[in-house]
Amino acid sequence: MNPRLHTKLCDTLGIEYPIIQTGMGWVAGARLTAATSNAGGMGILASATMDYDQMRAAVIDVKARTTKPFGVNMRADAADIDKRLDVLIDHGVKLASFAQAPKKELIKRLQDAGVLVIPSIGAERHAEKVMEWDVDGVLVQGGEGGGHTGSVPTSLLLPQVVDVVQGRVPVVAAGGYFDGRGLVSALAYGADGVAMGTRFLLTSDSTVPQSVKDYYLTKSVTDTTVSKQVDGVPHRVLNTELIDQLESGGGKLLALPRSALNALRFRKMTGMNLKQMLSEGLAMRKSQGLTLAQMMMAVNSAMLTKATLVDGRMDSGVMPSGQVVGVIDDLPSCLELIQRIIAEADVALASLCIPHSDKGR
Image (cartoon, rainbow, N blue to C red; front, side, top):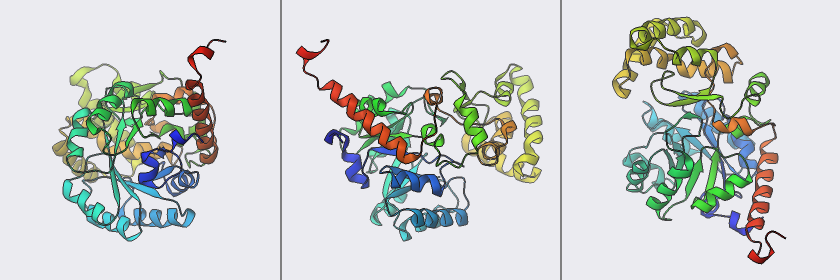
């Protein structure tokens, strides 16, 4: 391996290769997390979609599958966040990742116990904020990424964040990465590694049902939509009949009744009763400023995603995906994927080192 592929991220996390598997809800379980870490990258367990007992059991499961470092992704605003932090500390988890920036006090508690903290950010101003809190790194996701995402492409956002960080901590680039050429391009921008979601979802180690993986593999780079109608915030997902319905016309006049009908239509699938829907929806509306129409869908969106990615229910229609889905055509193991990316990166770096006088011969 080219020594330039051993970056500050590798030293900080104690990993062999500068590649992170993101904590995708319903996808990044113990098997995928451990497989990524065993392959020399950093696997991140998605615990935000788990209750406390499930999370604790999953952490123990990962430790039974690997002795390598791994991380856990959490919601900083979880009601039981203190108990969840105890799990990371008690079990010696290497890394805590957050989609929403945690409070400074939470960061300090983890760091004092030896747990590294790397939040995900989607804007230059977010980098400025978390750097004031002495985080151990930042994960920068550009607009190409799947799930909740921003509007600025990685090629523009990444250099902005690199300039803010100024080498003080590792910067991880996410959104649009799938091969060794992408890894080298991220390093050229000043990042210390890459994080990938959709690419790891589409591996043989992912527990997503085969029928769902096959569906993803048929999609092109233009077969995703960034929708606010799923849960009230920008969410990149595959184009499906449900998404088309949500994004179609009708304006504000029809938005509420359409969302109400969709929410009721999917209530049985999500297993939520009307009282739960109302309670959780009102809480989301208060904390996120959702419209009534968005509130009705938000209470169901996580379970609609689960219905597809866990249960194989293609009719649920909510499938988070990066645009990179359109350039993926196989399902390697995590080991095969990471080894291939590193080999491709070696070739890309070597091609950049050809003396100028030899080019074009």
